[in-house]
Length: 118
Image (cartoon, rainbow, N blue to C red; front, top):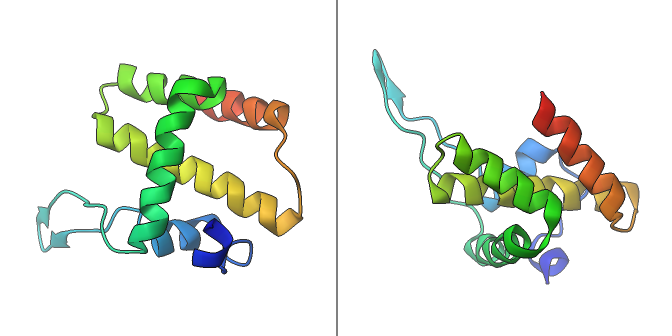
């Protein structure tokens, strides 16, 4: 389903894919005012599917669960942590399609450990 709704997957970089799906923050600034950076726009159907996948992964996938719990311990709200999980999953999928790889849980877990320590 994801490849039919997002055929650009694998051809764009991770920031472009996140923007296309609507999981990247949009600047809300004017002069000295620096507002919140809302998450909106993008492809709603893909974002809904990614939310459901991230929600399942935060419960059952050890690497995603650890990432989510670390963000929550840092005081991030539920939605912020969920969008971060969605964006991480989307970046992983983009890399897998670009490199024509299959999912390797050990590689994904080691990437999550490296990213969480720094």
